[in-house]
Image (cartoon, rainbow, N blue to C red; front, top):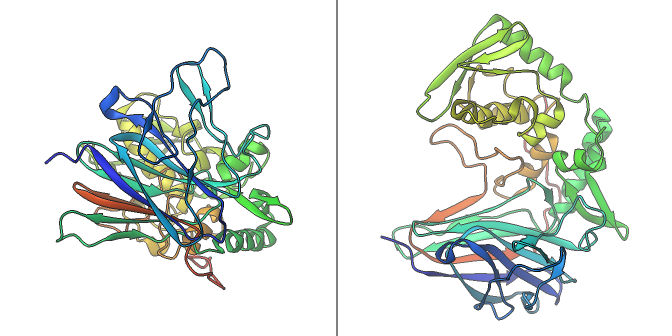
Length: 387
């Protein structure tokens, strides 16, 4: 049965601020994928026309005021692809338009962006004719605590929830990033963006490298060397979870050969981005099936403890001293340990635990998105101990 033409979304303000604003952007599926924004009344569509000049302002007010703390408002959206619900606390976000029209979104890596000092974040969703899929994400950065709850029109389905980080989650993540930096001096504290003596956000390692190209430059080198040495002497098997089945390979003449594809040694930048160097897809469907599983194994540092991926038990994730500690700490600070912390954080064994912090339903009744977080979590140990 196709989904309804519109979806109701409840937006909750659980912050301590009276000035919290939401914005909804996406591509309108039922309107030729036109650029869509929701106007400030929470129900009227705004389809921008192509401006003449780069960086033109929006012609409609799209800042939806959430009301005082502990209040909830309900908005209505049509079928949307690649949609986001943006939140900003104490300030309104500035969106601009380029010819196309193309939306100029807020950036955390452009120091000239007018939103660079604003406390903002977002959740992602797609609502099409088949289902609603929504998730929280930390792929780019951590800032505002955002959580999800999804009720279905099918009364047999339980309410799905993604709890997110607690109210003080960002501060605790920054605490643990500094603690990790004190251990290995790798630069994890450089990911922290301060504001007015506090913490504004914590960048992902990928965006940290965008800001400072020398950050983590040789961080993964010794781990990658150990992986290459191991699979010079034994095979590595990757279940592509696709029509390619399980592909086995090994290191030959310094290259990891898997099926018809070869992979050179990745750098830390390649591992954190999951999309550069050996993890560039290059148009091959077989390579596109291998990259997510291989790059996830590097981010979680499981290749020395398991030679069949992605079937590694989640208790083995992030246990090596060299790992994506940002992802480890972020998962550890989420109250249910779920949420995208790198681009392929949804990779896992069939039937395994969902790491990605997503909800989905073919007949959704109400999606609730809260900003502000649950009660403060006072200690918040990292998710896994190091070996």
